[in-house]
Amino acid sequence: MTAAATAIPTDAEPTQLDVRDVEQFLYREARFADEHRYDDWEALWTQDGLYWVPANDDDADRMAKMSIIHDNRSRIATRIRQFQTGRRHSQVPHSRLRRVVSNVEILGNAENGDLEVGANFVLVESRERSNELWAGRYTYRLRVVDGAIAMSYKKVALVDNARAIATLSFLI
Amino acid sequence: MTLTDIPTSSSGARGPAAPYDELIEAQRVHGSLYTSPAIFADELEQIWYRTWVYVGHVSEIAEPNDYVRKNIGPQDVIMTRSADGEVHLLLNRCAHRGNLVCEADAGNSSSFRCPYHGWTYRNTGDMLGYPFHGGYGGRGKLDLGLGRVPRVGIYQGFVFGSFAPDGPTLEEHLGEAKGEIDRLVRLSPEGEVEITAGFLKHKARANWKLLAENETDGYHPQFVHASIFSVAQSGIGALYGEKSTAVTRALGNGHSENDLRPEFRRIGAPLGWFGTTEEKVPEYSAAMRARYGDAAEEILIEGAPHVMIFPNLFIAEIQMFTIQPLAANLTVQHVTAVQFKGAPEMNKRMLQQCIGSVGPAGMLLADDTEMYERNQAGVAELRPEWLDVRRGVHREEIDERGLTVGGATDETGMRGFWKHYKHLMTEGRAQ
Picture: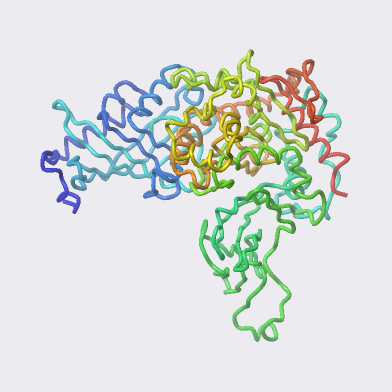
């Protein structure tokens, strides 16, 4: 348990999940992203979801500094709808993707009681332009909504987020 | 030829790498201009290592002894502010064995120490010393220092460098583009922009000129960006429609703009250019009206410029790009949100809007960059050899400033770019 666990609001029960259930959720999320199953992927989000890919500093102030992605729930929906137009050229045709998610670790509870989970990933993207190797660390915050695990937060700290990187228009 | 063969001043000039007069016509340009490594090397010499190139902004080195690593094409340039407040552009290369003297992206230090043999330099580029000085006959015996970009020019806080020891002044180079920078900074209630949000660095496997030409191409948005315009109910697309009253203007010296003011004036809504209203940013609006009085209404209606300053600075309203060419087929776009001094309400909105639009995952720029990369692949095909830049040539006019103006979707800006490029690569070559 992290120190944050002591700051849970009294009306929220901290989320407790078995690590195997957490892993199954992460693998499903990864598969939906790899296979461009946009509706299925979007359905994994809570209503207060935040999807964040920082730039230059893994712990940058996301309200004051540039991020590669900084989507609140509304912008996540816009991003998905843009894919679904069929005219998001940087994903037409789709990148071929496969990622490995590993080192899954339950880190404790966030202030709002969500379960915080860390994992590492390696991902190969294949496009006509090139193949790209992407790697980094995921941090998720999970809670149970209507009996199913959902994510309220996904942070992607790319190992090369301070360097020049190629177009990253798929779901990382 | 390798990049290291290229002289870093105009003194080592060689002959043209290609018959540019034949490759650049008034209404078409040859595909080899985007693919030839020899032409790229020639461009470094005649353009990037000679003319004024945007490097950084004074707000990035606000305090004495601040420094930040920047670039001029492939050159690694340290922008420093010495204790006396002066701005210096130094090359990141020890005078001893050529090692990098600065590894950090930014920091605060009065000196740089080479890690290899401990030679040290002031942040003005002057040598401070070297260890075991007996090997050089004592202290202060070496007339060496860090390389310098010989000319540094600052306009409204924007710092430019020129490797040519003489030539046009920065103000002469900027010419009519100065007014566009003025238009940006006056949107700050303190009359200054700040570059404080850090940069995204987005790689494009494409020639730098494809980026520079696209920046004021008003023809592409309705096609490349249709996906985001449709889902975000954006009004941007209409600004670049067939019926738009906006214009494309060649500003001279290769600079160009999409002047959207006719549309914003027609709509007549303060902050309409940013998709918001004064009520939503009350402190900013009050500060602007306090500073500018009656003029504030017009300033807030007309909004920010959309201007490409040759060869590498692109201000797209709320976002600022610099173009860094690394090879004939490789370019890095550095992009950040413009921030207005004294406008925290606006800055938060501008930052978040910018993040949504630009960079590797940006809902606009990912698709632009996809086009650059496909374009680079396409221009390598053997036929029809040429790229067509004639759009709107029959309906251009000369405005009251003597500048060439085309319609919102016309290729007037590209033709202005090529006119200046051709001049620099032919009769305007360094002697």
